[in-house]
Amino acid sequence: MDKFSDYPTTLVAPARDAQTVTPHNTNDLPVLPRAIYVGQTGDVSARLAGGQSVVFANVQGGTVLPVRAKGINQTGTTAGGLVALW
Image (tube, one colour):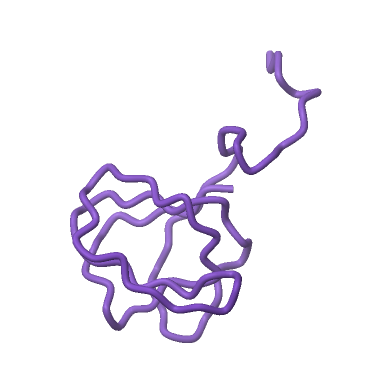
């Protein structure tokens, strides 16, 4: 039973779905996520929804990056265990 099924899904609500991210320099993620989970420490090179590209340096494993990333670049990403949350 989902007691919260009548509540709207907002950017501050817990994620309802997730998908493993395979970094790629040109392919966008299939769904624009609300955040990216980083499972293993390293750098994350992201293409953000607003059009900017940024490298999040030395992100610690277990961190949730609260960014709307349309893609994660293979070049510049050394972190592992990435999961898109939406």
